[in-house]
Each structure stands twice: as C-alpha cells, then as structure tokens.
Length: 71
Image (cartoon, rainbow, N blue to C red):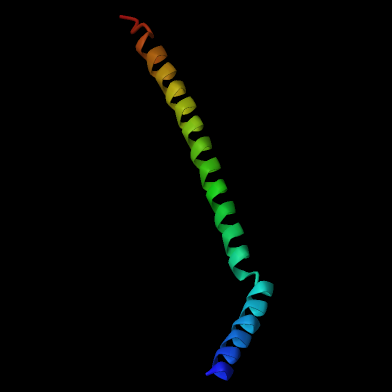
C-alpha cells in the first residue's frame, strides 16, 4: 500500500512539474482579456460616434425644415 501511495505522489509531482512549464492557459487568458478590452473600446467608440452622427442628422433636419419654400 505504501508503494502505491508513494507512486501516486511521485506521479502527481511529475504532472505538476509539467504543468508548471505549460503556458497555454495563461496565453488563452491573456488573449481573452485583450479581446474583451478591444470589444469595450469598440462599443465606447461606436456609442460616441453614433451620438455625434445623430446630432449631425438632427441639425441637418432642422436646417432643412427652416428653409423657406419661396412661395
């Protein structure tokens, strides 16, 4: 029984040593954070741009509505 337990502990140590050098999870997390930040930047930019364009079209509509018809 002791030999089996010792073998499990040694195998667990070996697996942990392999995972210590494995950076796949860290890289995936970094890419996920980067994608999230880019998405937030796009949303903020689109919202600001949408508001500015909406104001511009509102100003144009007001200007067109105030043009005398000439009759």
